[in-house]
Image (cartoon, rainbow, N blue to C red; front, side, top):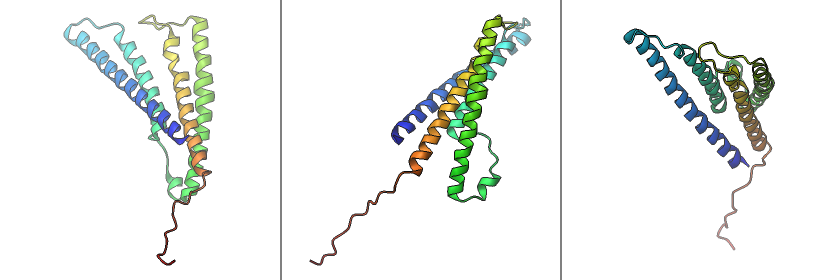
Length: 177
């Protein structure tokens, strides 16, 4: 079971890393084109500012999901530094539950409601005239990914905490018979 958890975790890490790389490259090209069109061609592009903003939003949210999975997110570890190893595991367990609750209720459920509202109202972006639901859909997607990461972490913690250590020592004959 732990092997399955680790393989799902690695697969998510790889997929999100690739998406972040593509988004970052797209953002760099978009901003570069914006600078070239404004200062060299003296004909500013009308949509690159909005596109760059949308790409940045997507990049930040996907990178936040990746950081959650890699356990590289911002943390205040003053309390954790003074705790025992067992207490640190309980603190991590509690933190995963809190993050899971936030990701599920605020990002996933709230994000789905936001997408639904944008679709119902027909909200479109000003420059690109793109449905705003396309921008907002990243919120429930990342909420789901963060929730999956938290569930994987909780499952791993439960599986390793309740596993009985196995005695791998084999009694060696003493040579006396």
